[in-house]
Length: 112
Length: 115
Image (cartoon, rainbow over all chains, first blue to last red; front, side, top):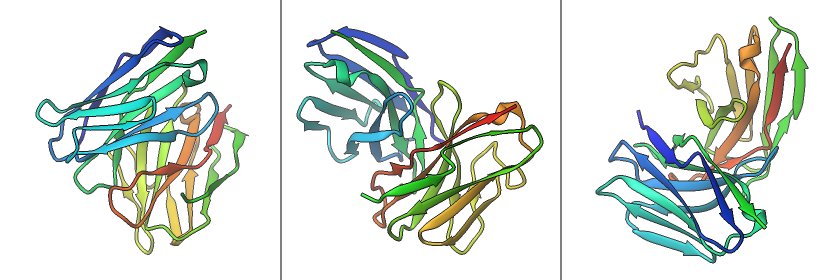
């Protein structure tokens, strides 16, 4: 099956700085890569996603890049704010589109 | 996006008992999934709940331990059987729209503690 690795496990940045979270996947057939944000005690919420036919996607302060050759994708958050503090999960959709395999998560702490 | 309701939101159970978690969606969806999130960990797919047929289980999860029902396109249940403290987790239901590859949306989860 698919194996998704995520780094770093924790990330601490100063408010206003940028944060980058990286994921790698193992199955070249994966073609959909969502990112979820989970605040303490709450459900995971989709924040951005990218498909394999696109190299980059941006939504305001959030962007995701995908390198299919290297099988890795990254989440970029610019101008971080304290409310960005949460756990972020990457995921890869394997073969039949329906199964999501999640990375281990990154706890982001934005210090005011 | 679909509105997903899970019941119960939390429960404390005795070792050896079973608990059934319900997932209700406000619209018909093709795919429903059950995940487990152990404390401080990531989400692990337990199974895909198929309407009209048996659920499809991931490696490491079996029907005897986690029986699943999917009687229609808006509802599913997950039972955690013969519970032990290792089953203490958050159990999340998620759904996907009819279009393959669309993002999954999650319910609020059921926080389960086993004494």
